[in-house]
Structures are given as C-alpha cells and as structure tokens.
Length: 557
Image 1 (cartoon, rainbow, N blue to C red):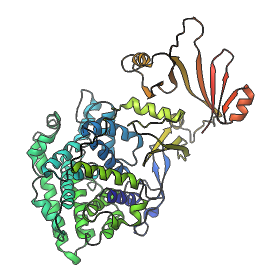
Image 2 (cartoon, rainbow, N blue to C red):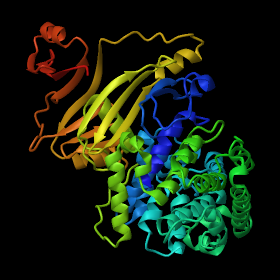
Image 3 (cartoon, helix red, strand yellow):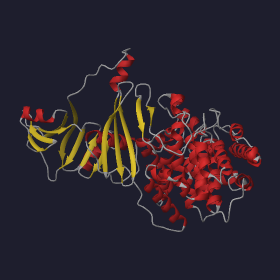
Image 4 (cartoon, rainbow, N blue to C red):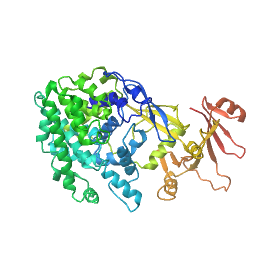
C-alpha cells in the first residue's frame, strides 16, 4: 500500500496542475504510460526562483508525509513526535507541499499549535486560514494509521486520523475526507474474500464510523473546539455538513460505477469536482475520486494508476497516490511491476510499511522520542550545511553520505542543493541566498550585480570550557540568539560564530583571546602558497594571521 502510494505520487507529480513544470502544458502533455520520467520544475518565489530537477521515480510531499507519520508511530507518543519534530523538520526538506501544510509546520516550529490564535492581526489571520484549510493534505498521509490499526476497531482508527489531521488542517472537509479514506483503506486491508465490483463506495456510505460527529469532537485536542467556535458558532453542524457532502459525492460515484462499461470516467470525475481548480484539492473530493477510480479499475489496477496520474487539470499526484494506495491495499505490490522497483527509496518505504504492520500485530518495540525542533534548530542546521558536513540529521538519524551542487536560478540567487542519504532514505535540502538579488531588483536593476567571490568568511570559532554556560548566555535563556548543537563539542551562535569545547581552557592572562577563523577559498593551492600555510591534507591548511589568530583554510566544495 505504501509502495503503491509512492509510485502514484512519483508518476502523477509532473502532470499535477501546480507542479511548476518548466515549459507548461506543452511539455507536460506526454503519452500516458506506466513509466517514470526525468523533469524540471520551477521552485522558489519572486526573488528566489530556480530550476528544480526531478529524477525519474522521485516522490513529492505526499510520500514524504506518509513516511513522517510512519516514523512518528514508532515512538511512544506519536502525536508529540509528529507535531514537535516531524512537521517542523518537514520545512527543511519538503518537495511541493501545499500552503496550508507549510503554514501549520511553521506554527509548530515557532512553538504553537496552528489553531491557537493571538491578539495581533497577523496571528488572527493565520488562525482563520487554518480553519479554512480543507485540502487533501491530511488524507494523502494517513495510510500508516490504517495499517497500524489493522486489528483495531475503526472508531479507534478514525479518532487517530482526526487527531493527526488537525495538526495541519482545521476545516472538516480535510478531516472528514481523511477519515473516510482511512476507513476505505482499512476495509480493503481487512477484507475477507474478493471485493465485489463497486461495493467499496456502498460500504463507505453504510459505515458510520467516519460519520459520527460526536466521536470526532472527542478525538480533537483540548482547546480545538473552543478555537473553532470563534469562526463557526455550531461546530457539530459544521462537521455534519462535511459528512453530508461526502455522502452525496459517494452517491454520485456509486451511480457512475453502476453504469459499468457505459460509464464515462471523465464525466463522473468532473461531477465530483476533480477538474475544478477551486475545489479539486478538497479532502472530501480527493477521497471520493480515489474510491471511484479504484473501484472502477480494481480488476486492472495499472489502468487505474495511469488514468489518475495523467488526468489533465487535476491534482494528479495526490489522486494517483490515493488511488494506488487503495489498489495496493487490495492487490499488494506485484502489480506495480518495474515502477515498484524504480521508485525512490523503495527499500525504506517497504521497511516502514513492515514496521507499521508490526504495530498492528502488537509490537511494543518503540524508538526513542526524537528531539523537539524549533526554527532556530532548522536555521542552525542550514548554517552547518553551508559551512561543514554534519554527521547527524536533526531527528537523530545518521547521515551516511552527502553531496552538494549549485542549481540554476532565474533571478540570479545563489542556490545550493544538498543531497543527504539517511540510511535508506534520500533527503534533498535546498538553500537559497537571495538577499542581494532581492535588494538589487527592488532598486530596479534588471540583473544582479554581485561579482563572483574568490573567498568567503565561513565562521569564527572561539574556545570555551563549558558550552552549556555559553548556550545559556547566548541562547533563548539569555541574549535570545539562535543556537545549534551539532555535537557535544560544538555550539553555533547564529550564522558565523562557533564555540568549540576545550577542557580546562581558561584565559586569565588579560592578553588577546585566541581566535580561530575558518575561511573557505576557491583557489586553495594558490592561497596556501601566498600566505605560507601548513597543509593538513589536500583540502585544509592552518596558519596564523599577523596578530596571532589561528586561520583554518579549506577548499571550496
């Protein structure tokens, strides 16, 4: 099921209506076939736009979030892990995520739940946006719950999905659609015998577990209903309206399925709103669209996958991912053929699915809770990437290999991509420096005027015997600067200052305090010769400046 969702995501992403495909519709229109493609998309904003190359089989935010939820479920408190670690961390490596999800992730990274309002106009507007978020960003990620709850009552599953959903979306359309989709997955995973043609939509209409508004209220976090009532006086009725909408959509899908060979899939999907950009990303419509396509193509699943992935003017990656998830729950992975082998991180995806199955079978082997993350941690990791090669990802996983290279920018911004291998998962982190570009364009310049740099200051390192004291003074408990601890022997303050632990170090002489300056240069050999530095290896050397400061010179990577 996980693998099917990932394949659908990777196959449908280039055709997705908001994919940013370079060349637009003319380049996007290719013959529908079960084969991944290399493609290039535009990424970034007005002053940060750059070309983002996507290799064949690479997946987007849909699969990234499925895996994030699966990781969270491996810990004793999955909701705390999801909201305090996985969602803030998602901001660092996300590929193609929707605005509602990103706003919620930023809220968690700032230390507050997205449904919590404030007194400022900005915070109140953010809260209103949250409760207006009814997209499919919840439904597309909840497959791990359906698997891990495989032996539990569906009411328990629905409660978990709703709790997960409110972490990013506040409108019942997102939450009801996700609950209905989770129940559909659960039914297919636990079905005893063959699935009767078209019966899934009928069974969903008859199943009350996802339609119980009172149950939903019990599953919601403390304070959520009170916050929602500021925008909807009757939250229960608001919820029931979304349930009724979903039932009506399922009834429409049923009629299309019953038409058999005389039915027209495009007409039915159009009636479900799958081609209407105003509503086709709604959780309710994506759920029913996936149920319809999976029901129609259950005997020939590859046609359902390809059909969903190549729909024009649709949210094709999510629809294909959700459709293939249902088909995968019904058929297993073999029908995916070569795509099931070629999709990015196949072994990692299969491993996470297996671990969710273990949870369903009663395993109580949990991973340790990962560290909670905030904005300053993300900023610190980006700075560490730009100046060194950290060995550990922010969630505690080891970085087994890494590489970096520049990407082409359409605004002249400096864009560097880091590709990190975390055991079996590949993570891409793009860092865009557009400060000078934006300033130049604001003055009316037609192009950036920054000249190429031969060298750049990387960071200043100071010695200290107690990094905890330094952190307390400079960090949130003192001066309030961003701090980052990539290891027990290092502490970063902001972008350019680093303290390094040296046991027993104490400077009582009153003389100039020793300073280590780290400088990265392009023409390493020439610089080393000019200043008479002593080479430590082929890419680093050390020398003292005229006043005795230590200078560590490294070759630009």
